[in-house]
Every structure is written in structure tokens, then in C-alpha cells.
Image 1 (cartoon, chains in turn orange, purple):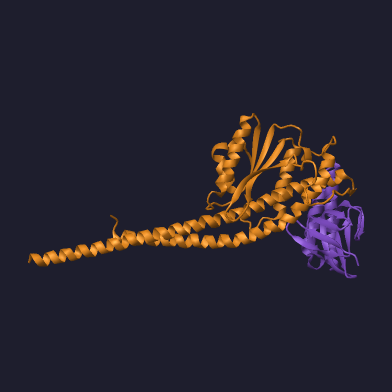
Image 2 (spheres, helix red, strand yellow):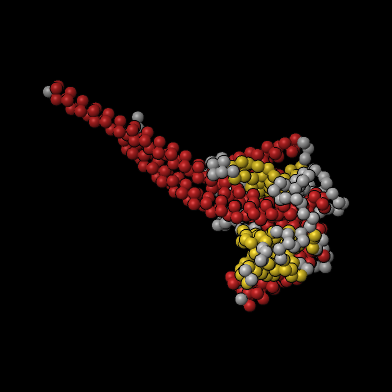
Length: 294
Length: 137
């Protein structure tokens, strides 16, 4: 049976924990709003880009000598996985979910006899994969100490991926990240980057009849500038979605932590009061029986 | 007067989306004035100014540092690498970029592929345009 003093100490410590989790929840909620706005602001660009790429790519992809960013190297031996996680923890299963998906993919690919290389974006993913699969990691990128991720940061990752492709270091590149579905659900997703996934057959509905475009300068030149840009924008989008998802996940994790702390305080307070009353009763009995004995 | 929908988007946000009468676009092979009903085209952009005309007067002018434009008869979508209203261009920033781009160009050797040199050259030109505009503003 813990003493009254112990119980008081525990109640106080849980109370200060609750204060911290509550504050973290508020901060996450505020940051979530900003991250969500940023993710939404990036969406129109990515959508238009996809539309242009779809109308352009389908025409060029079948020709010989198409750029490797569009059609890959033709082989399927070395896979590069770009794993996007957060730099911080305390966000429930957010980082673990992506890490687990990445690990399963690596195992599956290696079981097929493929070589896997991993480029991690965010500190937590690197930490997760290092435990068992450290030898596959070829690079780590973090945004520690940055207030917000800018397009230039994503572009730097894209440049790095492109250089690796040109150096023949991989054949297929995929992105693994948490897709932001809503504040409480993030879906770990795998998305192929190289070769670029082109919509099958017709252009997506809603764009109307496919216009026959004139290109200035030629199709190849446009594609040569468009493809690296598209890679950067896909990475940018993934990073932004992941950031928004991170704050969402952190918010709900901190919310339930706050609630749990509240429950615990109630239980401990009940326990404390009971112990206190038991002590008083005991003392009374001692006094009364002492008086009777005289 | 007939209008078309002009959309100007940068990776970081949607800057402009409204009906305009005419837009001047700095296409890679020369400035292009686009009116409603233009033939469908996809063009690349160099560093320059997009000018927008509405109700018979020029209402907006923004600096873009390269990108793409998709033109169709009733709609123009400009995908700019970056876009800044002329009035808020910073001269210091432009100077920094010119210096950076020129250093990058100087660092390219003769063995490097021609595309790389061209890309660097484009960057320098775009940065110089930005500086000129910043000084004028």
C-alpha cells in the first residue's frame, strides 16, 4: 500500500505530464492547419503538371531513345526506395507504419532476387530501418531545424535521385510515404516515380477532348525540362502530405495521451482519498479503543 | 470583350485564377501575346514577365523564373517555377542569384554535356532579367 505522500507525488507528476501533452496537442493542431494549407496550395500545380505530362508522355514514351526519367533504364534489377517519415516522434504509429511498409517491401523485393537501395527522408525512418536493414541505406536527408519545407528542398532530393539514375545506380524508383487522408487517418502508400506512371489509354476524364498541342520548342526539349520538375513536385507533394499527416497523427496521439492522463489522475485521486479516510478511521478506532480500555 | 481563364500556379501556391482578356507570356522562343481562342500549345518559359490585361488596362505583371504554359482556346495554365509580383522583387535577392548562377556557369568544364551548359546559361539569363526588373521597379 503506497503512502499518502507517494500518491500525492504521483498525482502531481501525472498532472504535469498532462499539461505537456495538452500543450503539444495545441501546438500540433496549429501546425497542422499550416501544413494542410501548404499541402493544398501545392495541389493545383501537381494536377496541371500531371495533365501536361499525360498528354506529352504518351506520345514520346513509345519512341526509341525516350528519356530514362520517363521510361526507366529498361531493366528491373536495382530498386531505389525513397522513404519519407517525420523528423520527430511522439506521433503515435505514424513513423512506424511507413517504416513497416518499407521493411516489408524490401523483404519482398529481396525475396525476388532484386537489389534494394534506400534513401530516407526524415530522421525517424532512418532510425527505424537502421536497426535491421542498415546496409541498404545509401543516403539520409533530414529537415531538422527547418520551419517549413520549401520546394527547393524537394528539388534537391530530386536532383540527387536523377544523378543516381544517370550514374546507373538503380533501375526503378518508388516513394513510400504517409498519404494524408484526413486528420485521423494517414495511409502508408507506395508510389512509383521512375519509370513515370502514365495513365493507360485515354486522358483522365474531365479534361474534355484531348487537344492536339503544338509544342514550342520540340516535344523532347519540353519533356527534358518537365520530367525532372515532375519528379521534384511528386517528392514535394509527398513531403508536404507527410508533414500534414505527421501533425494530424501527433494531435490525435497527444489527445489520447491527455485523456489517459486525466483517467489516471481520477483513479489516483480516488485511491488517495480512500487511503486518507482509511487512515482517519484507523486513528479514530485506536483513540476510541484506547479510551475504552482505561 | 471576350475573355479566357488564366491560371498561374507555382509549386507553392495558386497565384492567379480568373478571366482575363489578354496575357503576355515570356515563351522560350520569344514573347507571346495570348488572346481568347488561341491554338492549343505547350511552351516552355524563360525568365521574364507575365502581363495581364483586363477591361482594357494592364492589371498585373509578375516575374516568372521559367516554367511551362499550356494554352488552349478557352484556358491558359502557367506552371511557373516561381512567380513574384514585380513590385515585390528584391534587388539583393536578384543580385545574389546572378552571382550564384554565374558561378555555376563558370564551374562547367568543356567535358560536361551541352545541355548542362545550356541549363546554366538559362539560369544566368533568368537571374539577370530578374535583376533588371528589380532595378526598374
